[in-house]
Each structure stands twice: as structure tokens, then as C-alpha cells.
Image (cartoon, rainbow, N blue to C red; front, side):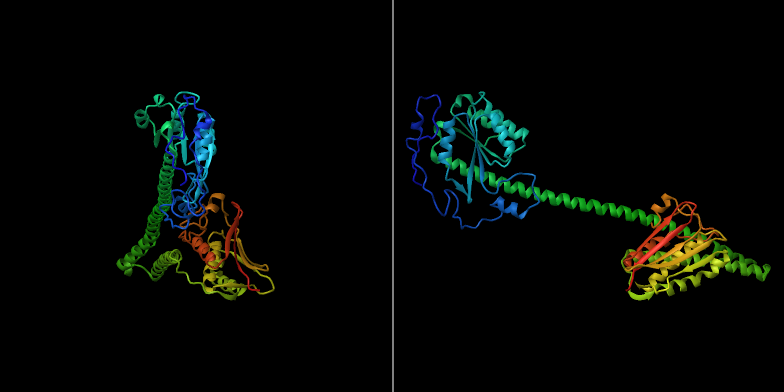
Length: 464
């Protein structure tokens, strides 16, 4: 350093010294090309913990506090113009951690408030006490700490009238970081204060940025755990509902089987052949209900555990629908239902899994028969576009109201409409259909109005 004077840069404002006397012993700093005054050489490595700018670069998501990454913003608050000139001259070439100062001037506490709002990333404040009032500087300290909630900015109180602001009282009552008299502030001390304050500010910023990043991670993890907990609660509720419905649906056919088996066992000799056949037929129907429920439960478990294996092939949907219809013709005839099958003249070749598609169509056609009153019609239509093949199953049953349509494909869905011949329903069929269609990259939906029947439409990818 070329400047060696220990004379004060700032003198008592009550003296009669001219402005020129303030600069009498001041010599400008030499400009250094490769290093700053108090920092390491520009080539020195800086760890993340030492450099909040590096942390800011590493953590782009943190923006709740402001930190200037280009310059150390320093606010000089003093009502004397000469003080601003001297501070600017003394610190004009100052560099710390490869960053220069940006000096901002305020000539009153009121102006300083405005500048603090415009520059929330100010690192250091040189603050006079007596300005527009005898304690304007002290009130500004309270404003910064209490109103702006800014504990990071370093505040150096410097006064030319110590009697208005006794050091011991000020240090205790106000959150400042240093207290100096202008008459004692030499050039060297100004540099030392600036460096110490900026180092402290940088350390605080590093800690705060780490804290915010940690808080962000904690909040994110808390949200994840909250979501997982909600999912667990939902799964537990589904499990309870699952067990309750399964137990109820298994209990009735089991009771019928046990009751009739006991009846046959005890009164076999008293019943004729026709009665025994009737009882065994009921037992067989009850067993089929149980088998159907268990099969559906196994399908649901397979779907929800991701164990559905799809083997895509080019399949003619016309032939597949025809095969499924043939398996249901006797049931339709028994309920006096007419099955109508319409298809285009060209083959409807889809990219399908044969077994899965058969299960989907079987469920939809079975439902149409189950919910159709005797003497009605069921229409099965095939159609295709350039990209899709479609199957529509239309019935003349009771249809679906809006509330039923919202829960139609849900698990254990209980709808307003009931089977027309006391057929058994597990409430799982359409849930399984929806999941299987999605597994084959298809779509399924229902178009219906209450008392006007329903049309279920399933759509798959077409093979050109």
C-alpha cells in the first residue's frame, strides 16, 4: 500500500477545518492488477463454504434472500457531502474476493429507507447518527432490523458527535456491528472495518443459504411424507372396504351352500330327485358366484401389483367379438333379449392381447345382458378409423345417472341400476375393464342418460 497515514479521514463537523484539510495527507491507492487489498490472489481457490456466490450458483432454487453476485453493495448514509466524497475516494479501488464495491449514497434516513427497498442486497452500511434528527441513524437501525427483518446487512455506526450517541448504550440497545467516531477513523481502520464486515456478511449469507436449502429440502420431504401418509390412509381404507365387501359377498353364497348341503344330508331320503336337483343347482350357482368374486379379486390384485402381462398381436376384432357373443347367446335367449351384431365389411385388425381383450368384451357384454329388462335389444357394433378400432355395446336398460357415471369405473362401485334377474354383481368388473384397457394403451368410456340405456365404447390401436 502506498498510503501510510494514520490521521483521521473524517473530522469533527463542529471544527472550522476546510474541506481541503481533510485530504491533506491522503494519497491514492496503487492499482493492483492481479490481487485485491485484503483478499487472496485472484487465482486462489475458494471453497463453497467460504463463498456464498458459489453456493448461490449451486442452489438456483433459493431466492427468498437477496445476494449480489457481482459487487459488494455498500450504503453510505450521512448528511454531509464531504463524507461521501472521502469515502468514495478511500474505497474506490477496494476489492474483496474478486468483487469490487458499489457505493450508494443517502443523505438522510428517509432517503436511506427508499434505497434499502430498492437494493435489498446491500451488504454494508456506514451510518451517521445525527441527520434530520438527533437519532435519525438509530431509528434507521431499528427500521432495518425490525421492519425490514434484515439481520444480515452489516451496520457500522460512525458519528462526529459521540455525545449524542454514547457508545456503550448504543451497542447494548441497537443491533449494530461496530461503532466508531469519525475523528478516530483512519484510512487503515476504514479498510479493516470494511473487510471484516464483508467477511462477516459473506459468512452469514453462506449459513443462511445453507439453512434455506436445508429448510427447502425438509419441506419437500415433509410434503412427500404427507402425501405417502395420505396414500397409506387411503389404501388402508380401501383394504377395510375390500375385506368388508368380500366377506359380505362370500358370506351369502357360502350360507346357501352350507344350508342346502345340510338339508340334503339330513333329509336326503325324504326328498325326491327333482328337489335334490334343484338344491344342487342352487349350490352350483352359489359356488359360481364365489368363484367369480375370487377371480375378480385375483385380477384386481394382479393389476394393482403390476403383474398383468400384455402380449400384443395383430388380431381381427370381428372374430373375437363373435366368439364372445356366442358364449352369451343362451343367457340372452333365457332373458328374451335380442343380440344384434354390426360390423364393417373390411377386417378390423387391432394391436391387441387376445386373452385380455376377450376378458374386456366378456365383461361389457355380460353387463349389458345383466342390466337389460326382458324383451329388449342389445347392439354390438364395430367401427374403425385410420388409427383405431372400436367396439360399441349398446343396451336398452335403465341407463346411468350423472352420479353413477362419476363412479362407474371405481372399485366396488355400487350403482343405482340393479340386475334385472337377480344376477350377482361384485362391483369390480368395470374397474378391471378400465385397468386392462389402459394396459393395452386403449380407451373406454360410457355414454348414457338415465332411463335411456347405456353405450359402452372401447377403443384400441389399429393395425394398418
